[in-house]
Length: 140
Ligand code: RTP
Ligand code: MG
Image (cartoon, rainbow, N blue to C red):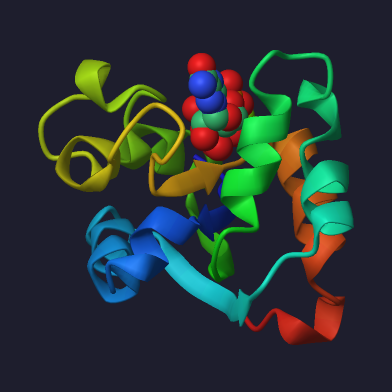
């Protein structure tokens, strides 16, 4: 097992319902440690850049609008197999398909307003962490 860092976003549907702490508790209960965290209002340009891989997808414009509809909390999570562990505790993209006990099963409103983002690979985690954090803002 390897100690990894992954990147998480608590999305606007969750901050709006004051679920920042509840979502973070789920991450911590899964064995992940929050080693960096900040609350941000994303600009349209920031959201478009972050989700650039999805720019040809039919849901891209709606996704960007949703992600700038309110504050987000961006976090760096550290732990054993953090990338996979975070994906497991998040649950499936569509909350209807998410396992019981996962963040999306308990909190998500819809396939779009699904409360959290998590990096899908170690390589993307490094890119996404660097998009939002300077090295000195991360304290392991
Ligand atoms: P994420 O990137 O946010 O961690 O979620 P994911 O890997 O589970 O899902 P992905 O396929 O990467 O999609 C990114 C986000 O776009 C929104 N989405 N909307 N309307 C739709 O059909 C649809 N599909 C995806 C969700 O907010 C999803 O998390
Ligand atoms: Mg994704």
